[in-house]
Length: 277
Length: 265
Image (cartoon, rainbow over all chains, first blue to last red; front, side, top):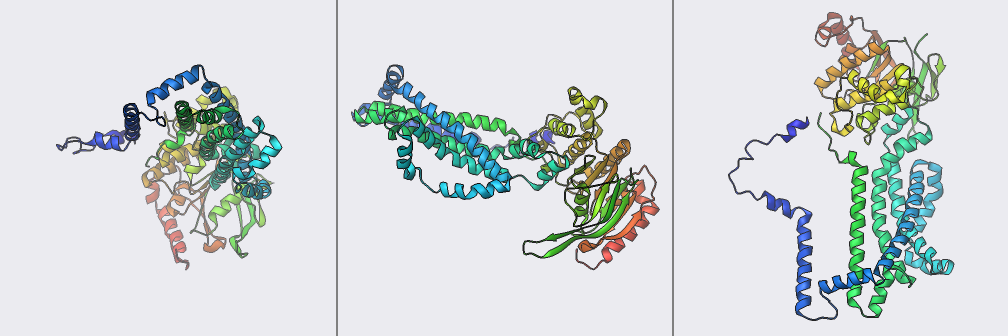
């Protein structure tokens, strides 16, 4: 079955026409986009070196500032602080979102009880309840973490719910005929079946988590990389400002890449195409 | 004592609009231990419903099912069900080995080596060999053909040591050549495990080839139309049995009966 697929198609390999396969492959891969990013950075560097603009420092100057800020300045501790808030908030959101969302999908009475709350709460923009949150929680750690939790829980909850609902009738009956208890059914069949959905929710939430962790540092005005950026703006240190912004972009990209790696590993079975009979 | 006793079992459903629909008019059947029974009939005759009622996956609205003399309220320990839709019945996130292990973990009663989980890797390979599969235990179901997946599903069911096996159109999604091989495989495991088998199919040839007895259900859930013993000798052979005079006569009779029924196909 699989052996047949590796056989070369007759008549194609020996085609005499010039072969542009590599170009097509390149233009259809992400390498193309990365090349554009690199070109843009080069253009930036050249422009900023040729013409002096206080509002657009050269990349090399930003790089030097980044090293300085990471070594001796506030960037490293600020980044760690933001990541700490993000990690705590994300972990709480994941546990709460998966538990509530999954149970809503599997237990009718929990769905009946929780659905109105969920549907009401998720309509409210976080900015609308911010004054209330500050009133109740002050401008401390608690506020920052709670904001991350609120924002990150919803995508996880909604996707976990969809995943729990995705359990097919045949799978449910399979659990019944093998006499699985309610608990075994959830753990051995419900959760694994929902996992791809849960991971989609967690990846959406991951991006939102970092954004919120940065913003809360600005709101509360006293911590994290958000505050670092705000402060750089106030003292008109444009290089530090760029260093902060680019750090957030890089960290966000890295976290997403790590997540994708874990996701692919956990749902390897899905990547396999269905073989023919 | 009968392995399965079906006493006036019927099923009525209430639709979303509040109508009552007859899924199956009350039927009675007594199935001897170790026999191979097929249930045939057109779509909507209630054959799958009857199988799910015997499996305890649905509750009857009339009558009762008894397995080994005990009434069925929930899926019984000694009964396993093989679904038509193997792609969703096998757990796609588990490899073949893990799927068979699932069968062992949720077994009715394990004896000898099988009772020792440390021996399971060897036991799993034996189970797979029994259904004609070798060297695929590390693969995921989606990497296998339909016929191979259904073999894994049968091996998983056997791993949980059932005494009664229920199969709901298990080979209808498999190509014709694989189907003939799967039929012979099923006869082999039926004999070697001393199973009682209830087999639902819409294929009259398949039913006759496999069974000791063929039950024909009337269309529209009206109950049993015919209960025909299949007296063709065993072991059966895909070519000889299907050319056997008794087989051909029975086939003609049953086909005639099913085709005569007025309802459109």
